[in-house]
Image: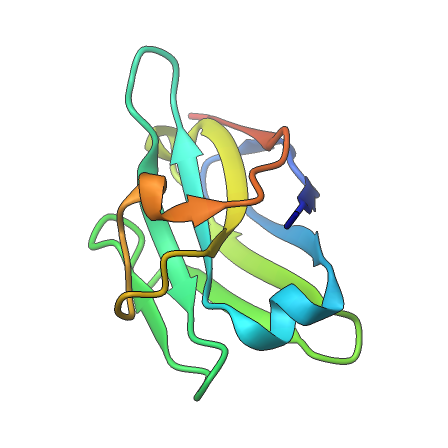
Length: 125
């Protein structure tokens, strides 16, 4: 079963940056598209960004485009999310694998699996 583990969250001021990491098992990293999602209190889990395993292409939610960068390190089997933050980015962040693999990108949480416990990101103004 796929299992991904997030790390790197914290509390920062608006305009500062954080880099989240996601440890991924090798066969998952090389065989599935990967994505980042987030969930703020009282809100549904929402798509943030996705990385294609096949050609490295990326896709972002409009709310983070130009501020966030998704990337992967094949040697370390690690997914990253580099973020330049605003207060509205405050949420628990999750990485997951697109197990349904119907198309790229998928923005639907139910098509992903391997959810970890997430990492909290808090941005103050």
